[in-house]
Image 1 (spheres, rainbow, N blue to C red):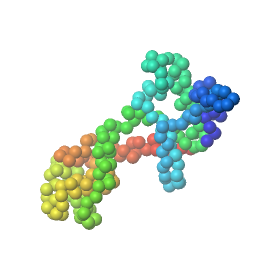
Image 2: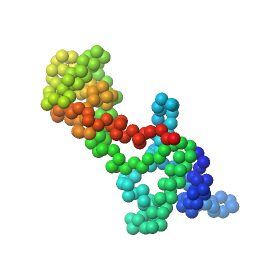
Image 3: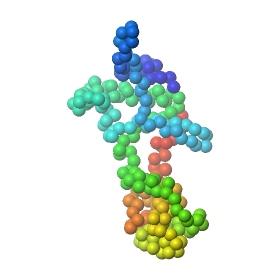
Length: 216
């Protein structure tokens, strides 16, 4: 990476480079603060390992506000200029080495999808005493009710008797299968054990693929 100071100089935005005051035996001096994103995703595709930079704010408007100021000053012209320059320097700095930058806010991802994933992920680390063949048969049973009016709850008692396991074991298999995409359901609708599972209409990997794509 070329470094944000060099990028700021080339873009003629040096005055917007944040600095802090340090002091040594010779006195006080200003030290530039590196400009980095919030999340640097390290990913892998067929071509190998690559990175994607995410800069994150609560709202899109927050990208035009200078942080650490009172609300009125955040929205001043000078604040907007500082915020715009800061993000421009960051983006170009990553771009120089082939890393794309994406702005991410609370509105970027569907909230129901986020809620479902938060619910599902803790189940992935839970274990049962079921054999792999039993687990596969149970997943097949859950797959059979997707798109019907039957809910997973309707199967728990019979599955528990069939495989001689606890209700919790059935839930572990259900939620792990959804998380691992062995049981594909609509994650843009609430996933509830007492409600029918709907077939997937929108693949979340396709919908948000551009946020994880390799740069040029």
